[in-house]
Image (tube, rainbow, N blue to C red):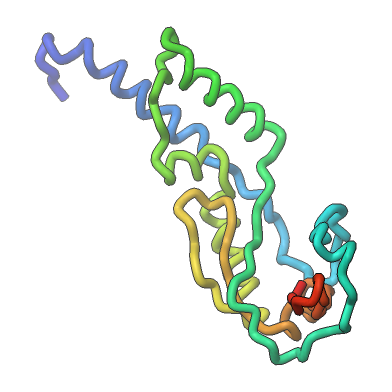
Length: 170
């Protein structure tokens, strides 16, 4: 391909500017089928409001939980890269100064890979949940389902609690 001499100097910067987006896409972290039997207890996941509440027992399994959120943790490398970017965005001498990311750019650098996100969504749907919202940044999923589905899938019971005279579900 012949390029006009005046345009030659633009090819390399454009090519280099496009290259990082291809190199920084996230690698897949889910390397085997999701196993619902392999669970880990998350410390600190109990609401502080429950500490002073009276447990009224498990809710009926058919109770619909209309909004649940599954949040994905960034890797240590993603966290370090995000902190670096945030500093660069505030540094007037940086090429990233006030260069804000679109959700898809954020996802490719700091979210789950597209394949991992698809795998989690497929798994939730296989377990009978309804995925309500798939964010462009690929850092969380909103979904709904029943208390029985939560118990079967996440090995967690949903209970009614009396919090100062008000019944709440946790």
